[in-house]
Image (cartoon, rainbow, N blue to C red; front, side, top):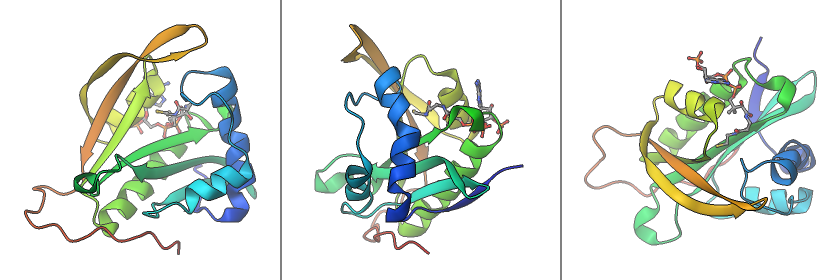
Length: 179
Ligand SMILES: CC(C)(COP(=O)(O)OP(=O)(O)OC[C@H]1O[C@@H](n2cnc3c(N)ncnc32)[C@H](O)[C@@H]1OP(=O)(O)O)[C@@H](O)C(=O)NCCC(=O)NCCS
């Protein structure tokens, strides 16, 4: 059974930080080197342009989350969002990544975003499998773009068009208002 998927609130920031922490300290899945604390996660959740953050909840406990962030800061990129998803190890392979992403992508469409992008440190078969199962297509690979734990890593990029065809005169994307 998939867990409940719901909008994240600032009260979830500590649980989100706890899910994310081992990916920062022990893996190259995240290129961060210092795990953000709950205050920093809450700050990111509230950062303009206000993009969606969702949590997966099982028996009242957060077991994973997915969120979107601005792809790049320059104005012409403002219809493009990066997406990412992290689960507790025991939550993997149960349909939760798909459930979080399905809702995240739906919200991005509703807000007027036109493209979703995902950067994946290679190799990561589960992440590549999830993105391709959700319809993301490979764009290309940044070779040796990150250095962590004493070696260089490639990052592959995947793209999902959210509007087909993309509008010639797109409306401004709207900020996310949870609920
Ligand atoms: C990547 C991750 C979010 C996938 O979520 P998940 O809940 O395990 O995936 P799901 O069970 O929803 O599976 C969704 C699809 O992904 C694919 N997939 C999942 N795990 C896979 C694996 N280990 N190898 C290959 N494909 C896999 C399946 O083909 C599945 O397709 P289907 O729904 O059509 O059957 C999860 O494994 C995870 O948290 N990994 C560690 C963090 C991470 O890598 N995050 C991504 C950062 S870029």
